Image 1: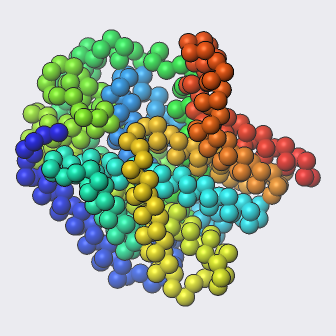
Image 2 (image 1 turned 180 degrees about the vertical axis):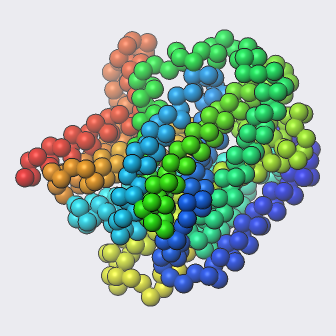
Image 3 (image 1 turned 90 degrees about the vertical axis):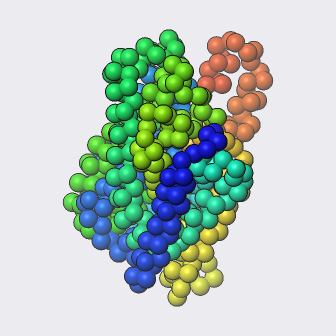
Length: 481
């Protein structure tokens, strides 16, 4: 890490975070009811909705996780954005239909179709997957803080980021989150594209960038085995199709037409930013290989490392890139904290709590839920420092549990409550067992280096979890007719 960063970085970072808190406090004064906190009063127009959709999806998984993978393997990471793009295309086709629903959460839709058991399982999957996602947003934010203030220890940095995210999200909910996400989306676009332009100009074009990479990094194919490609792409695809954040934003749209137009803009914006981030990380690796800059402390930090260590960037442009990274982190963290908080209040407390029904203090309950889940995510933040693998696992937990049942609710009239609940339980259980028990047990029965051992070791939990969930959904639906 740089020992003497420009004071501009620290000052800008502090000013940005304070501005977010002030926006949250200002918007909190306009809150009237639960719909304002959770859905911004169902009033979001195309521009704001598209901005918050893009800012929500382009998160730490992109600027840290995908960047880490691009730094590590090079050009073959061009496949990474395809899964999200495919899922967003499907949502574009569904957007008008989703906004026509009277629901607040995905769990509302699941219970309407499959009963209260599906609501409970959907809530459990959402809480488990999203809290993991929030936890590594904290770690990503801490990495940025420690670049700006090298003397700050990691634990303190993580706690400071958690404090800002919880305060900002809890103050005004969706009302502040959606509108600042639009600003964050603009910052992401200008920051990444401006710095990428500087890197390409320095090398003289993409061809020169590739020539500076190690030979293995120059291959557009071959770095991944087929089973690894499926293991990488499937979790993100399933997450998009069932992402409660995106559905919550579609439910917040002014009209079905607004939801559909915003989804199309989201598709274009996500593709642009995802590929720009990958290209920037590859340029960073080329700069390291050329000896222009030192290697980052962690491969996932390459974009932040460029902001602080690249002599090509004047301080103002480095600060702009820093703003981009912070915008990515905050816009993802607040969204993935607000959705489970909404679910905890609406799908657990108001549905099964002692008072049953809408609370007399919905804003207080929403803020308490944000605080509780934010603290749980803080505890998880200290358990792992891998962004890419942790992101894939969080996507798997959520996607393999909820997405098959959700798609069945929308498209398969023959699906039954028993089938949906069995599929959700099977998907969640298989994902957890494969991650912690089954995979290792199977590897113990094979010899390192043989085909079966390689196949098992490269298979992500998403594949057995999705297969098991889909099979259980189909079998129990058929048998319960």
